[in-house]
Structures are given as C-alpha cells and as structure tokens.
Image (cartoon, rainbow, N blue to C red):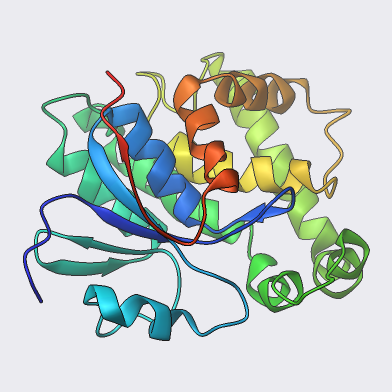
Length: 230
C-alpha cells in the first residue's frame, strides 16, 4: 500500500436520512482543523469494490481510513489514532486520569446503537423509510435504547459538565454524540424527560465542526479535500 500523507476517510450519506459512522471521524478531523480527504461512495454497490482502487485491500465496510500507509477500520479505533496523531494541535483524549472513563464511553457508543447493525441493510435499500426502520430494527431494541438514554441523562446530571468528561470535549463525545444524534434525528428516542441529554445534543450540534461534517450531505461521489479550518 502506498504511503498516505493525508487521512483518507470513506463515507456514505443518504441525504436527509443518515450518515455512516465515518461521520464521527470526519467530525473529529474538523475539530482538529487538519487537512484530510473524504471519499464518498454509493449505496447498493459493495464498498470493497469502491474502495479497492484507492488501495484498500482488507476492509469491506465503513468507516475505513487510509493513513500513513495503514488501513484502519472501526470508528473508535480511527478516532483514537487521529486524536493521538494530532494531539500536539489539540487534545481530545481527556486527561491521563480520565483515560479509562474515555475508553469506556468509546465502547459504549457502539453498544448504545447496537440496533444499527440489523437496520443498515434496511436503510440502504432504495425507498427505505423510517417506518420500516422502526418496525424491523428499532422496536425490538426499544427498552435497551431507553435505558441507554437514561444512563446518559444520569451521568450528565450528576457530573454537571458540558461534555462527558470533566476536562472537556473528547472523542467520547464524538462517538456517543453521533449515536444520540442519529437516534434523535430519526425520531426514535423520546427526550422529553431527558433535559440534560437534550442540552448536551444541542451543544454538540451547535459546534462549527459538527456543522461542517454535516455538509457531506452535499458532496458528490469521489474524493474531496477538506479541513484545515483554523
């Protein structure tokens, strides 16, 4: 594999409906203010076939990142690698005392959207609807998702901080924030009794880097150089 100078992130978007979990990595790169390339692929065509011309040899799913000659998968791992690589520009890893807590949140971000595993095939079919998603993927997980929202609400309420870690914004927020944003964006969770989660989501959505990541909605297929916002 040829050495990749800029991080290359593969991403897919269903405009107005969903972003792949690559969104977390793109959001982090925008927060870091570094240059990167996002490569938009399309639904309905195997991702592996679309990524192979860029040098991907192993990965079959998103997110996938090419960086410094390495092929890296899983959004939590990608965010960790990027945060460590560019920590001298801005740290999103919390303090040394918060490392275990941060890693726990990174892992929890996936467990709180477990339902996405069966629902992605539904979402990626032409003509898919939120109603179909709800029936086939969300309803069986309703109680689990509700308890996860309660977990966030209790933590944010007890901690009293703006973000999950006391030290400030971290990759824990990018991982979990994407999960909560997606659930809320599809109307699949009730936040009427979760004021702390509601306020937390609003803080994240008002961040300029978050807004810039959302603009991937308008990108055409192919490679786009982005970042270096600061």
